Length: 365
Image (cartoon, helix red, strand yellow):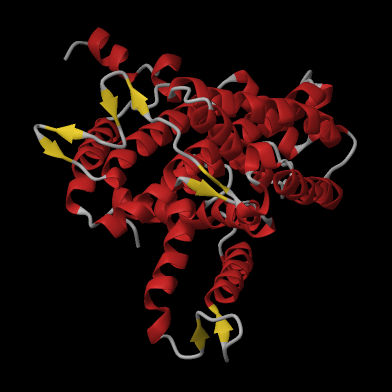
């Protein structure tokens, strides 16, 4: 190797640092994820596909909330309102008017963004607990609207949703691969997790941009950020707009996948679930909310499946013992407290420590 070649290999270029998949291991991991994405639904049961589908939908909303809480430092408990907005947009445009998915899904995201644009300015005057209370009020306002706007939502009785999910020749509700008919849950797996990948990649690029660095500066020291030229109002409102847009997109997918929604689903409990996904998964990371969504979504399904064998658990609200719903609430609360006390960086930090251990082996001790 000549001196010129050696110098060229030792020089670090800025373009190499900002590449998403700049190492051989990261590119191999990407190929592995694509392979898993293609074959995993074929080897899972219908129940397992259902759980993973719900987790993927939740991951999109959690990634949006993470932009607000993790990267901008703005507290929000109103995620359920935006999810409900997206679900009823899918019901109105996709089901009642029969519009295709490339119309009703972007429309849900745009309407969610519009609502976030209206709510966002509240963050300019409020912060911390006060901002949390304002966003909490959105949940109750939303439930009032969902219960009384019967022409769109169906009121307390709820509404069925038959929004089409066909993109070109591919109908994700009735997919066929190599002549093999796939179940609805398998087809939705490809749609949902493809969107999770797109959203995660978009968020990753966003936080590495000037806008993303401005969000993180506002989170760490908003006064100092304003001094160095960050536009506080624009950055905070933009964070609300992006977060509510992704939540509404998740809501549209939720309604189309579940095929029925009712106002009681979009309650404070759903907002707490999304906060738990961010906290347990790991705030201010991209893969953390996805891990949190998988973790938080799986727990209730496991409890519901094995509730009959758990002592002291009843499925009847009037029976003796604690209900499954109350147990899930208690578990979510304990998980949030436990991770905030023991591991504030969530599951993402555990994974990063394990990764660092094996990367440094045998010098890990």
